[in-house]
Every structure is written in structure tokens, then in C-alpha cells.
Image (cartoon, rainbow, N blue to C red):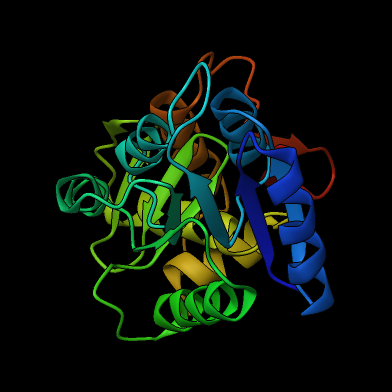
Length: 228
């Protein structure tokens, strides 16, 4: 499956050839012409990398970057900017940008920086802990911490393991027996209703309305799955 790059720039005459060039190299692209569109696309379908223009109407690239990082997300971000002043570049890097490229640039340099950022992100020993995002929930598989947006959840080890199981395979339906095997182990001799109890506790911590769950859904006759 090809990697998805979100291109954010209000200059149509730049972003269109940029998208074409990246597609020719096998990437999938999505285009946003302003900061608000960028956040909408990012939240709907988290990309593998973001090429982010600094100066845009309604919401600057720096503001977009800060919002992404506030959500505890480490998606690689390359700032594409006409700003060449050292203090501006430092500000972007301190806000969480992984790299920057200054306009005007050549396509070879752009592709080299894109490939370099992706390689760093895919390294198993990358400096950032591995994080999984599904909807508003973020999971850190290195520190075993979880958040709903910017609120950290207080999860028991079993609750965390159930949540990680779902988020590692978000489209899969898990039966109670499968969850017991993955979370409690094959030697567990308790009642399968234990799963229901832990799911109930998880919903209390994650769902806006635990009585009408949208994130962890019951599939009657089968088990549980993450909502779409």
C-alpha cells in the first residue's frame, strides 16, 4: 500500500505539480489549500507525512503544526516556506517540525527530504515512541499510555491491553474468547463475562455517552469492534 502525503499550500500553481511529482514516485497525495482544510483532512485520514506551507490564510502552517503536536501525534512534518530567516526556521523546528525546505526548491531536493523523513519515521528505534491513533484516541505502545484528544486516560493493564488489541486491528471483530486469549492468556479459567466488564469500564473512560457507545461497538452474536 502506498504512503499518503498531505500537501498543504495555498499556491495552486505549486501544489498541483508537487502532487503530480509525488504521485509519479508512487505516493498517494491529498491536497489542502488552507489550514482549516488541512486539519479536516488530517483528522479524517491521518497521513504518513505532511508537507506544510508556513504562510496561509485563516490558519498558518505553524498553527496547524502546533495543533497536530498537541494531539501527541508524531507524523513527520516538513515545513515548506518562503521564510529563510534563521529565527523563523528555529521556531518551526522547536514547534515540532522534522525538517524544512525553502522556496524556491527543486524537485530532487524535495523528494530527498521526503524520503529521508519517511525513513527516519519507520526506523524501529526512532527517538519518538510509537503511537497509534484511531479517531480521537491515541495510544503510546512504548509507555503504555493513552489519551482521548489531550486528556490522558487512567487505564488498568487489562484495559490498556484490550484497547491496544482493538487499535492494532481496527477493522476486526473480536469475540470474547479471542480477547481472553490475547489479554488474559490461554490458561485463564474465569468467565467470559469478565470481558464485558472490562469493556464497560473502558467505555466509561473513552465514550462521550457510555450508554450509547460509538468507539467500542458491540456486534451482536460476534463480539466487539472499533466504530468507524
